[in-house]
Amino acid sequence: MSNKLFNHLFNNPVRLLAPMEGLTDPLMRQILTQIAADLGRPYDWSVSEFIRVTQTVLPAHVFYKYVPELHHNAKTASGTPIHIQLLGSEAQLMAENAAFACALGAPAIDINFGCPAKTVNSHRGGSVLLDEPEVMFKIISAVRKAVPSDTPVSAKIRLGYTDTSRMDDIRGAIAASGADWLTIHARTKTQGYKPPAYWEKIQGFNSLDIPVIANGEIWNSEQAQLCIRQSGTKHLMLGRGAVTRPDLIAQVDTADFPEDESLKKSVLLWQDLIAHQIKFLQGEAKNDVVLVGRYKQWLGMLTKGYPEAQNLWNEIKREKDKAAIITALQASS
Ligand SMILES: Cc1cc2nc3c(=O)[nH]c(=O)nc-3n(C[C@H](O)[C@H](O)[C@H](O)COP(=O)(O)O)c2cc1C
Image (cartoon, rainbow, N blue to C red; front, side, top):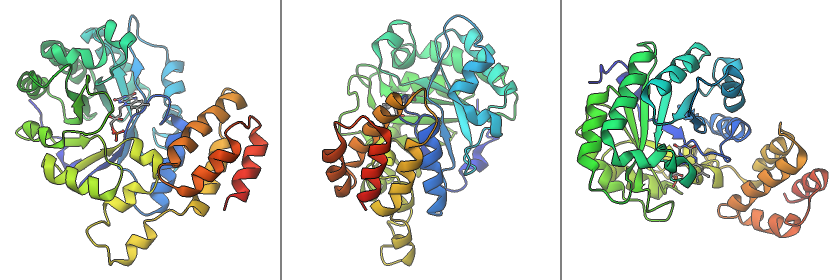
């Protein structure tokens, strides 16, 4: 059972940046957590992309590659802590990797039970384990026992694998496991990433004596407020919406007070986002081809949040040269 040692972290509603493999990598985390801090509403923490545990205790360089923030007290430059997410099915091996991650400075361990990828699921990792709550229990409790008692261990789940019929068993496994909190992406694996998200189903987990964080399909402040009402929890994790509108986090918390001056301050205009995009393009990556590809992925998402992004997208979609993209970006204000 939970020792409630970490419930004080949830005295105020938490706002988290979701782990998204290939999207919220260290560079994107750096940018998004900086924007949030500049807007006066820093993320409480973010979670790394999943690190897959298969046969060994991974060498230190793997952890540093996924979480270079470990070199800086496990925080981004703006001071946002990064928790380490592990994905795997062997309880003992997960526990050993978690203990090693903590020795390297991980402030918390999160365990992935939501990944829908075929390769991952065929090796009994990620969301497929939602059909095996007893394995979930073994993994979480082994990790809980292996890491220092002052390091939180959390789980991130979906509502089920193909359907929601195992929800009670999943809740029971989480309750018995000693997990310190639970994040719920309010869809089954089969429902993928398509709207809607079933926020009301999260209520089924609110009887747990640990904090519950709601996640899925929050793209604007109205949806955030609706999610809070329907899920019955005030704690949110923002995913793709936070990449599409990097100011979403600040708007969620000002939505109740639209006449408030702070609402204006919570909006990040396109012209102010340009410098951040340039920083992204100047960030570290394997090479410029990778960086330009990743930037285009972001710009494609920004077209859903900013009309200016659509014009820029039309202009640079075939451009491969990083310097030319930066010039076009500077001219787009
Ligand atoms: C490209 C992509 C990669 C993801 N990678 C991870 C991951 O590594 N670990 C994880 O727990 N969830 C991962 N997710 C799921 C997100 O954390 C989140 O639960 C999901 O996107 C729902 O939130 P949203 O609708 O606000 O995007 C990923 C999602 C996307 C779109």
